[in-house]
Length: 279
Image 1: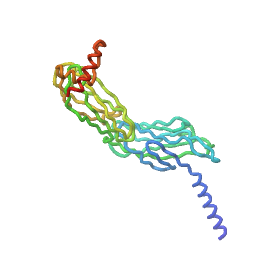
Image 2: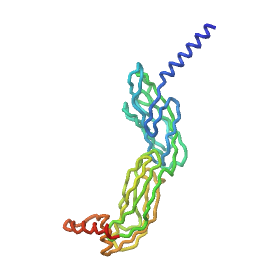
Image 3: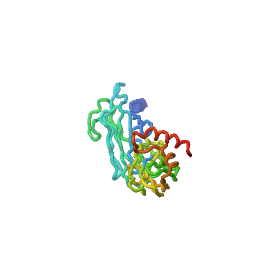
Image 4: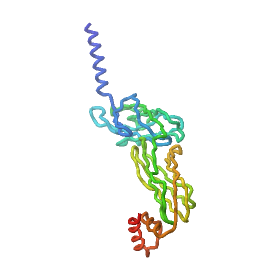
C-alpha cells in the first residue's frame, strides 16, 4: 500500500508541475484571449478576399521565471486558394495574416497556426528558454454580409461644372480592416474613383462628388466595392440634374469647384456664402 501511495504522489507531482509550467499565449487581435496548446479559437467573420490579422504577445515568462521571446507565429495550414503569411521573427507583437480567396463561398473554415521558440515554423531547435511551441486552430467565418452601405440622398441638382455631392455610408461589420472604392457610371468624361479606409467594426460617412460638364439630366449608378473582392459590391441608381442658372450656380458653390481663376476668389467666396443662404 505504501508503494502505491508513493506512485500516486509522484504522479500527482508530475501532473502539478506540468500544469504550473503550461504556457498560455495572449492573443491581442482579432480577439483578446488566452490560448493553450491544441485549442480551437473562434476568430470572427470576414468577407471573401479580405485579410485577417492575428496578433499575439511576443514575450512570455519562461525557464527560471525569466522573460523569454517567441521566435515566430507561423501559418501551417489554410483552405485551398487562401494565403498565409508568417509574422516577423522575434517581434514584440507577433502578427501573422491570412488572406481568404476572393471567390470563397460563405461558410466556416479552419486554419492551423504554430507559435514556436524557433526562428522557423518548421524547424526543430533546442527550446532553451523553456517556451517550446504551441499549435492552435482558428475558425474563420466567410460572409458577404460584412459590408453594409447606403446612399441616403439619390436626387441632386447642381450647376454645370459644379460638384453634385452624394452622401455615402459604409459599415464594415467584419473583423478585417479593408479599403473600399466608390465610382460612378453613366456620366460622360467622369471617371473619378474615391478610395476610403474603414477599420474592422467601424462605420464611415463620406461623400462622392460628380461634376457634370453640360446641362442635362443624368441617371448614373454609384458603385461601392471592397478592393479585396468583387463579391463585396453594392450599386445604387441615383438621379442628377445639371442646369445653368444664376441661382443654381450660387447655391452649388457652397460645395466648391475644382478650378477657378485666382482673380475671382473674392467673388467666389461671396457666392459661397450666398449659396448657404439660398435654399
